[in-house]
Image (cartoon, rainbow, N blue to C red; front, side, top):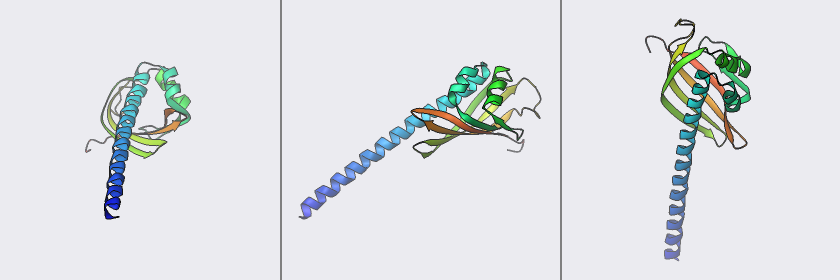
Length: 152
């Protein structure tokens, strides 16, 4: 009886470790995929590709810009089509899984806008993106851009 219990305990331990390994691998794949999609959003903005943005954003997408104003999907894609973002460098990515259908990606960015005014378009910003799963696709639901202060 004691041996059967030990065998059962070992089996359960191995099963739990395998499940944990699968979850970590799945989380790593999701992290890599959402960081790639985050970069694809920035690339679409730089290349004025509104069609790609429409596919990557949810219909009810909202952004709080670095100036503190709320923008909807049409504002966001319109700014991209107008070429307001001329270049950007994204770095320091962090990933947080919320559940099976939501995740947050945060990152820092060096922004180059057409305004050329660091007050209107701060060069250094921190972003937080909320990604949601719709069907089998991950889409950007919300983005918060925060200007980094000189003391940060």
